[in-house]
Length: 218
Image 1 (spheres, one colour):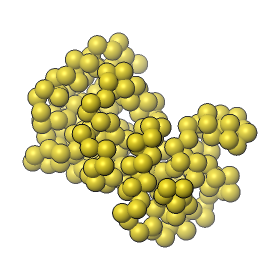
Image 2 (image 1 turned 90 degrees about the horizontal axis):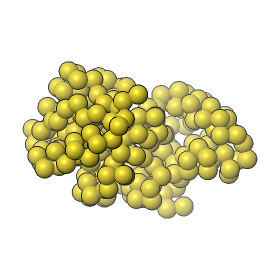
Image 3 (image 1 turned 120 degrees about the vertical axis):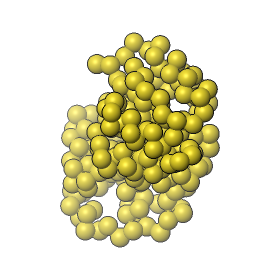
């Protein structure tokens, strides 16, 4: 299956470079380029991409607001935030409103293509150390919210899995840590997302920090 990608960035060089790199992949097709957030929202409606590579800082409408509008209107479309800063507060908020992860603009062609494939498969960009640190820094900036009524819907095992997701563990690492089959881990993750009404593992990780299930830095 070909993954349809929309690149949204106000810098022509970035848009064209990413387009060339991704179109060189046999399973990825860049279907459009947007010059700002408002343009991105419009093109998502017209082109129905699977993935949007979204610059966080753009004129007219920034990447955060564009991400919010897109995830609310078309929840099947996945957003990867592009930034030159691994500590950009816009990125923290974008993760909260539905982005599936973020990527630094100086990432290699291999990292870029792998990120697109990971998110297209329903995964989240949580594995890199910088992403885990990003979420931890975000959690330090916000007082944990009381979400006990939603956490109470989870079984003891599901709560344990949620804590480990927030620590950046992959399904394979979760299976190894809990001594269970990887397919069982996938079932737990799916149930957690459904019970908590979350889009993906990134939102699950942010939820765990906000709910106080995980303490940043530990």
